[in-house]
Image 1 (cartoon, rainbow over the protein chains, first blue to last red):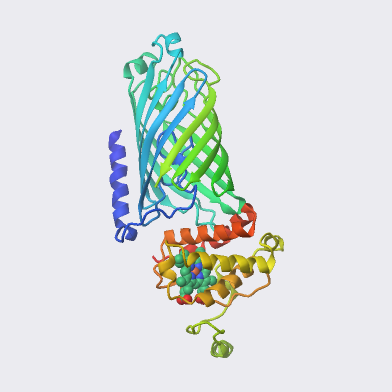
Image 2: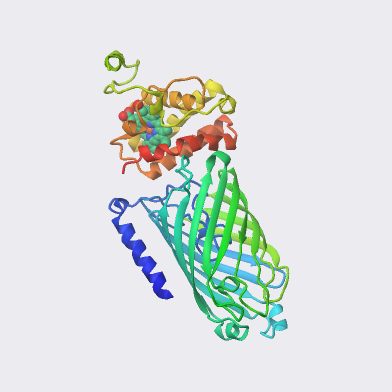
Length: 292
Length: 154
Ligand code: HEM
């Protein structure tokens, strides 16, 4: 699976070097506020949960940019933390990384894993903007379209196998479309993710119920309230591969506030549904992103 | 053809401006179609508001360190006049646009995407100062955004 990832990276770099912008002098910044998105828990540019076709960083076609994030989702029975970063090359290619840890707190003891048993995973991502400009193409219906790949490596393979998970590693393939509809002050995004992931990959990939790729949907819609503030909502559907616990969609309502050119804070009310038999995991999502 | 030649020959340089090579005149040179109705013009506080915004925009861009160099030695008087015409035309304020096309007007400036970003931010600041509601600002910017493709050097 890692081969797919490598193939995309090589193909992306080849495309990048062939573009004329690569020849000139590099230039810092230049993107308009909020038009590089915030960071998903997987490190890629997006909302908090849903991936967007936007490329991370404040750079334009003439530069290199990036972002770093720290996110916590505080749920009734669990804590999900994500830290990571992304590099954006010429607003064309994005490479991202995030480390997630999922603390089971007291639920860990109930599940027989031990108190504060913590699942984890590393996510390596690459994204290529294929066509369209979400911001400037206001006279066209065509959105910005990107393809992406994410290689996930979960840490607790023995537990994953014990709960019915088939693999501790997995590769997701993503197709994303994003559009800023300026005339309506809207930001819209849709992604199809081909994945086997259980709970984002923290509980591995594939399971006793299904070990096939599923096409899952990530949608987001936001309203630009000011040039610094975006209010919106997201939905992300997920496979339901494990027999021991139902898995359903995740939804959230968020506010992303770019209070300084290089800093954006995102606060959300997130409903991650049922996780490992613990129902109604609803709580606060808080993320800080620095971008350049 | 005769009429066009006549029109070109009749072009005079307004006071305070440098002469430019003759070019065909058309409102289409503005690079965007006007809004319908009068709501947008009202949101920009009429012709007077549009003029204030265009003036303030030019005042801002000539000192914006990101793009000031590009504007050095350029005909600021002409730019002010034509931005007022262009904005007024697009906002359906009853003006005609007498400038060059957006491609012609920016050729050889070597503009980059980041330059347009800087100008847009300066325009947002000017519209904010005038008190144009944010949603109306965005509707206007939606008209201007595609001009980027013509203004930026490829
Ligand atoms: C999409 C945004 C833009 C719009 C709507 C716009 C509009 C205009 C207009 C109406 C003119 C007059 C054309 C003429 O002289 O016949 C003009 C000229 C000019 N613009 Fe822009 N412009 C844009 C972006 C920019 C940017 C980003 C810069 C540089 C930072 C810039 C710099 C200039 C200069 C220097 C001239 C004068 C050129 C000359 O006199 O030869 N423009 N622009």
